[in-house]
Length: 209
Image 1 (cartoon, rainbow, N blue to C red):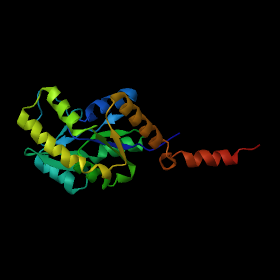
Image 2 (cartoon, rainbow, N blue to C red; image 1 turned 180 degrees about the vertical axis):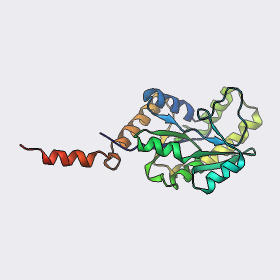
Image 3 (cartoon, one colour; image 1 turned 90 degrees about the horizontal axis):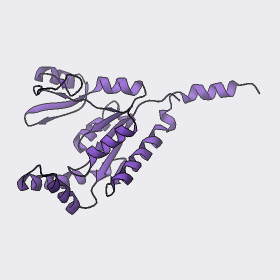
Image 4 (cartoon, rainbow, N blue to C red; image 1 turned 30 degrees about the horizontal axis):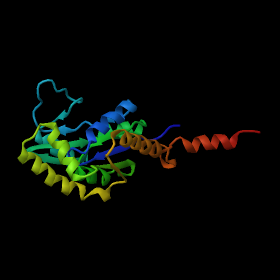
């Protein structure tokens, strides 16, 4: 049955398992596309235009924002990042789903955009702050000061949990993955998303017994 694509927002504090869950979801359904951001920073060695990022200068980026061609955008360490609307709308109209790895601020902007009606938002919580800190420490990627800053930021991010359609407490990775699959399957089946349902039912009603 023909349907419109979803904009799947996945948010969480750092260390809650969002990236792992996103990878598992895309392994389960390879038709999912990951949103490609635009940025004003320079390409790094090996980065490909349109695959890793859309590289734009500040004038081009701001022109896209002014024209309403960014679903969300923010400044990070002096560089601009954002989600171009065009590729997402094209995928949505073709019935393909797009996965967004954004924070609560990016999620707010996407939900408020012209494509907001097609958003399914999911927030991933850790089972406890102690477990969240343990996961951050076990990565062995950050100093104690950086981890303390991440923990403080996590409290702010967690405070926005009620803005999301679904919340998953990621205590068990397998169970959380199954919850994500269930959410996606149910949202795809919503009547409002089945754009081919009306013509199908009309053909049913026209059938002769």
